[in-house]
Image (cartoon, rainbow, N blue to C red):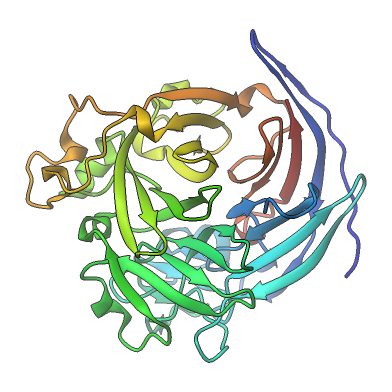
Length: 405
């Protein structure tokens, strides 16, 4: 593997109680493809930064990151990005054979190095694609021809590693969580009850252990974060946004996001908590002030039932600490019933939110990239952040950013 170069940038954030600084900021250079179109050329690189994780047994400079489904372009953006109108609604996949991949990376004082690439595979060892499942977004090729739905397809967004070498990842299509072997083979996909009909022909084991209400997620707003307890008995994951429950109008206006607690051994959800998103006006570097522009793109478990959540728009990213014991679980309540009206997402006077404490607001750190989606948590005072550059479709770079408190 080649060692890559580094761009250094120093910035300091001071407040009453703490000071964060950027130790280094490394440009990631992993070329993918150069695609010549009729009116434009797409220069694509691998967007490694949909999620990040530091495994406790590794050296402090070793992290894991994960790609999402691969390069994709909204139909409505095809004229702007590709020079021609190709479709009305859905996603265009310039590289439909791309397979979501886990990267193991080492950071040095002046370099980074890719130590391992682990493609995600079906039970027979065949790499899976990032093409949409049935029941999600329509998919098209570079000429605007429809692509078949892929029951094996994944939109991977976050990961953790366990001491037995296996991984758990979160993804958006189902939305679902998956147990992955050390070589990338899918051991089990855990989906919402009722979604299995959309995965007919999937070549891996499926469990419908998640609440059916998760399927009410807005398209492309599934599960984008996952964490694991220190004893590796429990997973935590959050929806990216409020559910479209009962409709998209409710999703757009709501600030109520569901966080779930999952018992790994018993394949059972054992807790559900509500996190309230900030007012969009408090994201100082972003011009988009709509409530539905805010997303939860990552979480990390810093202790049993203690989490740090990454809340962002694009240029502004906030990290909040929450403790699940500070709030009551709504699991099994009327709020889990899709027939409950008004729904949780329509309710403004809900009073059982998790208490949140701000740890870091990156708008006060000069030089931070936009769309930060991953946090490799080394310890309370040392993190490595990574952004999602959408595979360079807009010629934007991926950065690994080491910060210290």
